[in-house]
Amino acid sequence: MRKIYVLDTTLRDGEQAPGVSLTAQEKVEIALQLEKLGIDRIEAGFPATSLGEVESVQQVAAAIKNATVTAFGRCHERDIDAIREALKSAQDPCLHLFLAISPIHRKYKLHMDKAKVLETAAAAIRYGRKYFDRVEFSAEDSSRTELDFICEVVDMAIKAGASVVNLPDTVGFAMPEQYGNIFKTVKETVPGIEKIQLSTHCHDDLGMATANTLAAVYNGADQIEGTINGIGERAGNTSTEEVALALETRGDYMNAKTGLVLNEIYRTSRMVSKYTGMAVPGNKAIVGANAFVHESGIHQDGMLKERTTYEIITPETIGLKESKLVLGKHSGRHAFKERLIDMGYLLSEEELGEAFAKFKALADKKKNVLDEDIHALMTNKISPSSG
Ligand code: KIV
Ligand code: ZN
Picture 1 (cartoon, rainbow, N blue to C red):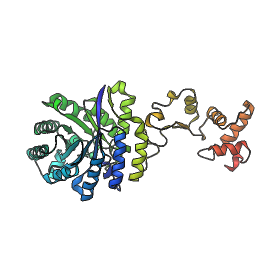
Picture 2 (picture 1 turned 135 degrees about the vertical axis):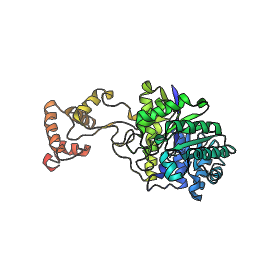
Picture 3 (picture 1 turned 90 degrees about the vertical axis):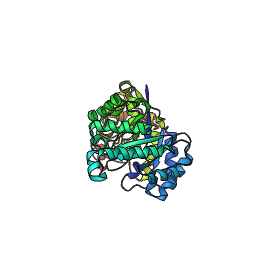
Picture 4 (picture 1 turned 120 degrees about the horizontal axis):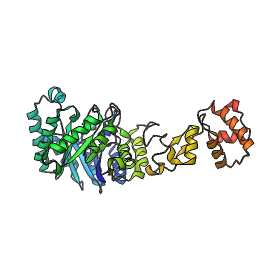
């Protein structure tokens, strides 16, 4: 099994989600939880954005003992100097620089030709290497860049001294096969590629961030970048937890795994949601409130007979206590009977038939039938028509 390194950027790209702003204390608490989750590299922030950000990154850097702490900046000496200041007390620091490489960004944003992009990035990586043993270089908007130029950029970054080269799908534009092919081509053609790690970083504009990330891993990426709950710019980033669970569940297919402590996932998700104020959608994969809840009668019956009929991951894996069968209009007799037994009602088949008919009538009027509703039905305190 290949180990896949995880760079979590909840505290940088995640904080770029509209409306999110974390205090230094909140960043430290989330970072400590990410450390418990077994994240290899924690991206703490973008120090050149403000003095407060330098301070926050400094506090995260001082608190983290068992993970690399990275900080993000442009290919400017001023940004690199701010990162030096912010990471000065990190036990294992890494400088993370980026520059856009696509034709659209070169023409409209940077006003640079290819040669200037290569020269600017190489000079910044070299400057960074004077102060940092490890430098990650991100070639922004790689997925909309000519494949031969991506290879030239990776070659330049290796020669300038980068240890990780990231090829982001910055605007969530890539298709899994196309994105995977970028990694395959770079791995097969760039000389000295074995000296560095290749990283994937995807956005979810077309809902394909996790699929694209997995395509990159399948084609040789060594590191994945993501955020908890998938928060981030616009439609967000790849969800760190989705990739970890996909690799865990389909290790047979991918032959690769992260080193995450999976049963810390749920706790981490809820902490990030609380501090960012971004609610986790109920149907969100892995950490949504409904991810382990079964409603229909056929599914509930299957679950009661054998969990693997409808569950490919156990809730315990991510640190939750149990799956739930919610009683509603799609629920069947089997689940209803089990709930009655749990509540202490042992009925004959005939009594059960009567109670089930009342329950169905109530469920037609009420989305979820709670234990107190069942109790009231059983003690005749409510009639189905009062639902
Ligand atoms: O989406 C992106 O391209 C990024 C950087 C890693 C440049 O956030
Ligand atoms: Zn990003």
